[in-house]
Image 1 (cartoon, rainbow, N blue to C red):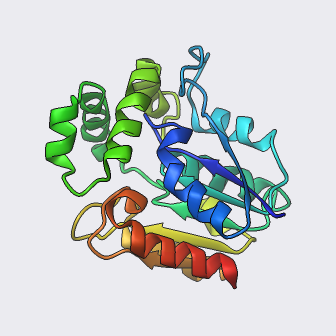
Image 2: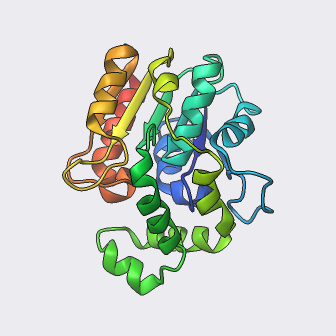
Length: 230
């Protein structure tokens, strides 16, 4: 059976990809999930720079496919760009490929605030989320090293993966949230990468935000499933 690696995002955990795991296993894939450094109750790491996350992922595989979200998708981009044999195919859900320097303080503050979310607050902010997604997010927040949330940005420094993304040489589905709702992948950046890397297929889930697999699971499942089946 084909093997797929699932990689979560910042302040999340493998449990947050429970739905994606079920989709893939129903389609005949064997799934494995990894907890990024400082996440899932792991001991604090020495550093949280993007290349360090990527180094951890590079030690796994090779994979028939990798499905990764947000920070995980960023790290997967670096690994696949450096070693096309690591994954035969990539599905990148809202990869963070570039953060303008002027936007970084607001993004860090937003990520730090997320650590203090209560169930009531999260349910009010995300009324459309499945209760299992709410539970997974709250458990993930409780298990993450708080230092990881800030230091992923400060240890990385300039956050710009455009060259790596533009050099991807494996079939890659990039799934973005709706720019009219919220996305961390600027449409102009995604379109530029799709022009530079002909194997990159850029799609938008209308009405979804940064977590399309939570925000519109039906549309995301159809998109990912049909792409992997071809």
